[in-house]
Length: 141
Figure 1 (cartoon, rainbow, N blue to C red):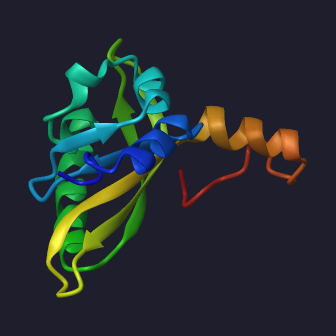
Figure 2 (figure 1 turned 30 degrees about the vertical axis):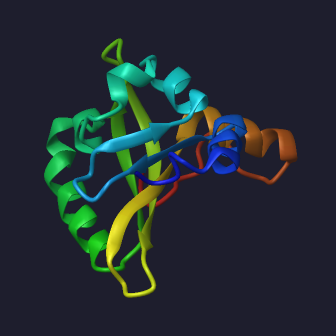
């Protein structure tokens, strides 16, 4: 599995204060970091082995599946989605995927990053005085 045997990489992923996870070639979650679990209220046992689409708002699953097919062909992407928290809350996020390929272009899975738009983007932007305000629109969200 991706990075599972790479102890330094796993420790780094677990220490990052952003939602990060890995999916395999079947789009199943193979690793999630503590920040991602806290964001959605799930445990690792709740998430690991589940398809990433299981956590997406139902009407967005088909679009995500199409984008994941493109990922396997070498196209990285980011999309606005509503992810489902364990408590049923819809969390407005940007989901960014980067495919992992061998030297021979064989798809091995992907790393993904989750940015909670309301919590991460606006709060950290305000702290850094970047000029983003609560009314700022990202890709038409």
